[in-house]
Image 1 (cartoon, rainbow, N blue to C red):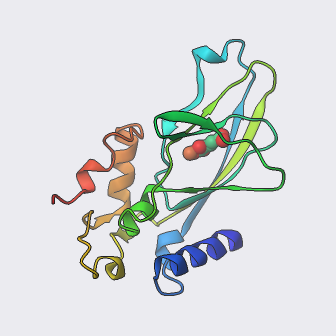
Image 2: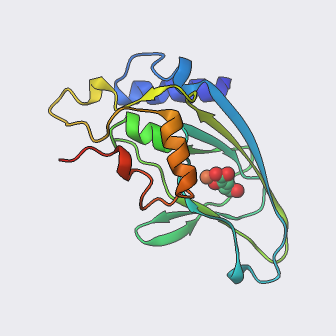
Image 3: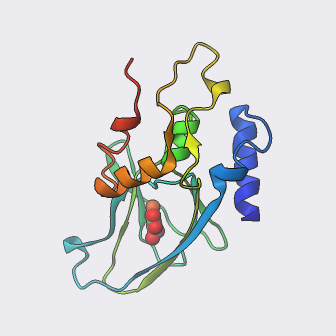
Length: 178
Ligand SMILES: O=C(O)CCC(=O)C(=O)O
Ligand SMILES: [Fe+2]
């Protein structure tokens, strides 16, 4: 949590938001999820985890030492090789929304391989269920219109689960029309 707070503090500074912006309710909930991907005889037949963006604020991901994480960039899947003793930091939808799209979450997935089992550990930092999430006021002053309406995090999360994280649609109910 100390690492997450430090990273969020740097992100706040980078966005020009006040110190402590992401402290409190916006980062109140933390979950550790450990994923175990056994070897798969034919990796072309199944994915470890389908394409998605994380629904939370940020994710601190420890990949282990087996390849498997890929990000979708310019229409292509690109492998993110594990770096020893390093974490991958994923931007979640809540950070994308609060930053009014200045920061965007990367779509990612996990693939399997036929030789080695893989274990990854994802530390999800999330707003509390009753947190009100909306683009930071400081970012919509300078002639930039707000791209999203305010909502309770619990509303976003229920919709994300109902839509099974489908990135084509999960943001739609929260977007403001031009
Ligand atoms: O196993 C991985 O590398 C990715 C895990 C992930 O994206 C997730 O748990 O949301
Ligand atoms: Fe993820």
